[in-house]
Image: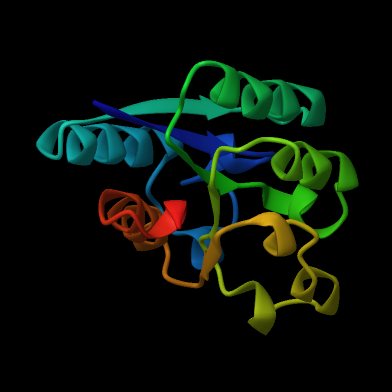
Length: 147
């Protein structure tokens, strides 16, 4: 059975409360439940983890490779724009990562237009709301994130 890590970074624990006009009204729990169910339907184990702490996210990236995770769906939140430590962790593992953003970061503040993660990710999905996570899962199901 394939294993996919659903990894969410800072402030994503506030989904449904934080800026609902941008991020919607669904909660992180709603997202995780939906993704786990999609995994069950596809015989894929979805492992969910969220942290507001950079080091914990890095540890989870390392652990993903060490435990044989097949792919990572990762919304690094604001770490997208400046965390070279997370970028280096992704570059240093063999596990493919698809970067996901709920909002279209390219229509927002200028500082959000640069991702230090994108160059080491297999792909990036932005601006499609929570559907972006489902599309990333679909890419892994089809083997697209692993090429």
